[in-house]
Length: 459
Image (cartoon, rainbow, N blue to C red):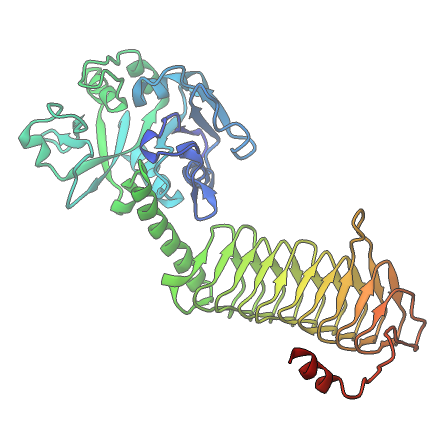
């Protein structure tokens, strides 16, 4: 859409959120609140996105690259916010104004509004919606020809008459303007209302007085008009956004067994024929290839999964799991873990900052940290890499086809070369050569009559 600028109003204080976190930065399905209208505007093909911030500059460092910011010097309403952005508005451009706390707007809705605006030849086109319960929203007053006459605010008693309050068509706070007409009308805004603010909808009567047409465009989906002013509304918006995310994955060939118990954030990518079991949470930049089975009761955070991976009842964060790997149940893969093709991390296994080779298995009850493990290795139950000496971390190196006995502790730095073995209950402190068996434990001594002496001493 050439010549299209989006102005996003994000300077509100958000006091009703009752939070130390600025309202616009509250998380919604893996993206800050203000990030949703920004993403929609960018996806709609805007040439420029301008975000209006507060004097505290709370959004600094939280916006995508290339998004311009301006400061609204005082909290004087939505009209004052657009005035603050006037220097970024090209008179020859179409300008779309979006609320920063309206996360459910879509690129398709923006494109539909802009198309309608172009076809009706109006100076302004307001996106409207029909609500069964329009309480709290500004009402749209139309003239006899069906065009917008004005918007009546309803935030404070006395702003609207009973007849106006009975109207069910509401202002979504989403507009398309002719740039030059908008800039001229902004100069005529006045704060003659109950709150003493400059309302952006008040430019509409000014445009009409100048001989321009102000049109309305039914945006179709009332959810798009949902604004977030408190945490209850944030939860409502999250439910809608999450349902949209689930639907998009479903249409792309992903099975979500129980959407009501499943969290999938907006940045997650899943391949065809992947199945997400109940009570699973996929967050951040998590990806999974085709044919994976995730869950139940599994959390993935910034985890990269290949194809045909099985993760059962486990927690994976900032790790990579390649094709054909099985994980869990009750496994914990920490940052820096790499499980190569067809390897396994089994029950109650924790792996951190380690490279597990192709076909290698860590079946159960083991901790592998700061280790390089070769191919086709089997680490027996309760294999531990003791990687920290109280001051520094050290690495353990395990070659191909190594077999460790149960309850083996590898005191790093140490190397087990190709085809090496360790005896059960060994504390390995020295390198084990290729094909050798390393045993490091005391010889067994049986003390006859021990139980009888214990009973006699107790008496």
